[in-house]
Image 1 (cartoon, rainbow, N blue to C red):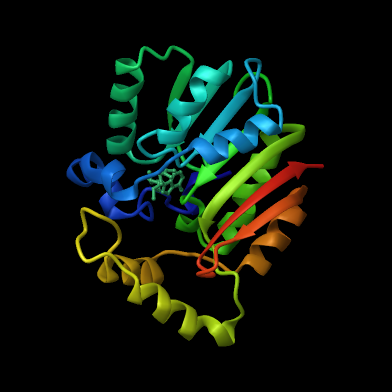
Image 2 (cartoon, rainbow, N blue to C red):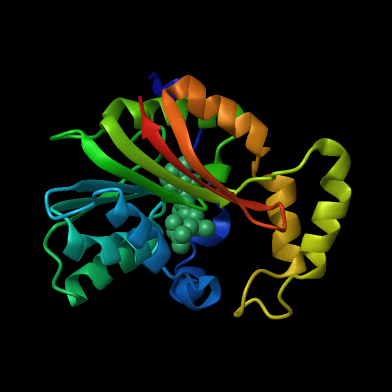
Length: 232
Ligand SMILES: C[S@@+](CC[C@H](N)C(=O)[O-])C[C@H]1O[C@@H](n2cnc3c(N)ncnc32)[C@H](O)[C@@H]1O
């Protein structure tokens, strides 16, 4: 793809994700527990021979937890600050099978055997829908047939007439302090400057990219969804 018209992923990565100070506090703020997703992928045959690619890996909570269970983990992110922390954590933990790649959904070039699993959590919403569809095609291209995409994101499982009620309820539950979660101001920044989409749009994109959705979880807030998809 020609660079001159490619979407600028770094410019849309979220300024906070490029800020080492924010990144240092990210894990405490996000409180991510990878256990359930790992258990789900193990049930789908993630094992010592597997290759896993984590797109938008951030500080690496999922990638580093997956590494002891599989052969190769590729952790991909556009943020140098995120990758610096991820690299330090991988070294601290003595993990030798984690490859750290500075790239985005639209620029990552997969080398070696096709991947068995692709994981992405709370990152795809940094792309507008046009580019999400392109990114999903790119993911399908480096997954093995039968390979699994586990995708979690802020994805609205409602229809446009419900948006106001859903968003107001979400904003009403925002964290008071930025260290403990996402504040009302941060949630409004997400709504105004990032690209969460409707589940029914995303599902069409997944289908067109060559995925069969095996399982969908829509959070009761209608803000978060998780998809387990298999490449046809
Ligand atoms: C909210 S964080 C999520 C990090 C991690 N996946 C997690 O669940 O904790 C979003 C991450 O996506 C990264 N990101 C933003 N745009 C991206 C893109 N186009 N390609 C790859 N990563 C991107 C950011 O740098 C950031 O690390």
